[in-house]
Image 1 (cartoon, rainbow, N blue to C red):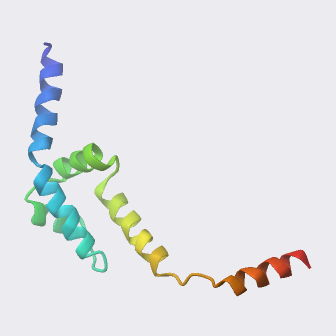
Image 2 (cartoon, rainbow, N blue to C red):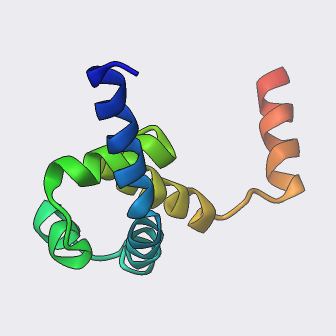
Image 3 (cartoon, helix red, strand yellow):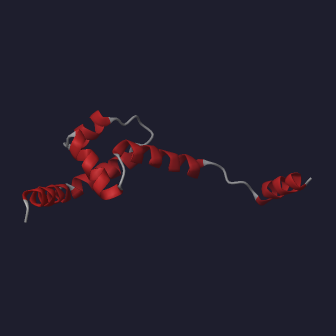
Length: 98
């Protein structure tokens, strides 16, 4: 096996070793979405550096930590929006046809 391939395999193994830490960090983020969360909080909470956190999020979620936090916050806002009742839909349809 080549040196580069060994390095990639070692890095993937090292990232997999952090799976539990990653899952705990994600749970913590979910519980604190209504608070400011920055790199300092993520690194302090996980004990991992910026580069390792980025690598873990890419490995397990195919995104960056901050993008995932923004997405999770956005999903919460969508869920909190009131759903239109059927009468609202009928009014919109009727006014669109007029």
